[in-house]
Length: 432
Image (cartoon, rainbow, N blue to C red; front, side, top):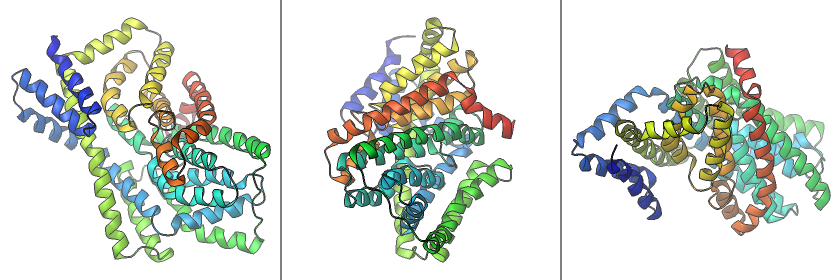
C-alpha cells in the first residue's frame, strides 16, 4: 500500500470543507485516485451499475420517501394531532407529551426523521407556543422526538437508515425493524418522564378534556392513517411481502386514503409530492453512488484491511469494540449526516464486527440509535436546525434545551449496547 490510497480521503475532506455535495465529493475523490493509479475510469460506471443492480432493497428508499411526503402533505398530520390530543386529555404538559406520541405514530408511517421534524414540527411548535411553552423547549422536544422515533427504527416500519444498513450488511430488514421496538419505547418512555418532571417544574399548561363523543369521532377519523403500519407489519412479518414491496404498498395506500378518506390530495399536490420525492431521492442516491465507488477503492487499495487490522489489533473483545465504535460514531455524528456515516464508515466497520462475532442486527440498531443522537447534538445536529428554523429561535438556545434529552438517549444507547437482548429478543422470538 502506498501514499496514493490516502488521496481520496484527502480530496474528500477538501470537498467537505469547500461545501461540495458529499456524493459528488466521493465520486470526484475516487476518480482522482483511479487516474493516479493509471486505472480505467470506466470502472466507475461498472461498479455503480453492478452494485445498484444487486441492491434491490434500495428501491424501498424512494417509496418510503414518497410515503413520507404524502403523509406530511394536506391535513393528515392535523387529524393525527387532534386524535392524540384527545387521547391525552387534561394531562399536565399534554402538548409536550403529545409531541412524543405523535412523532412515534407518524414516524411509523414514514421512517423519515426530517419529514417528522418538518411536517409535524410546524403544527407542534405553533400549538406549544400558543399554549405558553418556551420556544427553545418547544423546538428541542420536537427535534429530539423526531430523531428518537423516526431514526431509531420506530415502533412500526419503515426506517430508511435501517434499510440502508440492511443493504450494506446483507441482513434482514424485518429483524432490524423489530430490533428497534424496545429501544424506541425506552427512549420515548424516558423522554416522557423528563417532560412530566419539567412540566411540573415550569408549570406548563394541562391539556383539554374532550367529550366521549368527540374522542370517538377523532379516533374514527384517524383510523385510516393508523392502519398504515398495520399493513406494513402484517405484510413484512408474515412474509407475504418484502420490505421493498411493503414500501410500494404503503405508497399506494397513502395515496388512496389521501384521495378518498381525507380528500386532501389533488393533482397539483400529487405532482408536488412527486417533485419533492425525486429531489430527495436524488440527494440520497448521489451519496449511495459515491459510497459504492469509495467502498471499491477502500477494498482494492487495501485501506479497508489496514483499518480492520487496526481495530483487531486494538482489541479482540467485541464489547470493547462496541465501546470504541460508539464513541467514534457519536463524535462523527456531531459533524456528518447519517447517510455519510452509513455509506462511508459502515463498509469499513461491518467486516470487523463479523470477525469479532458481533450480531449484525444488534450492531445495526445500536449504530442507528447512535447516529440518531448525533442528529440532535452540536455543532451540526440537523433536527435541531430544522426545529429552530421553524420556531425562529436561536440554535444555541435549542441545543441547550436538547442536551438533557441527548443524555437520556445516551443512557439507552449504553443499555442496548451491553444488554443485546433488548434488541435481539423480539426479532429472534418472532422471526427465528
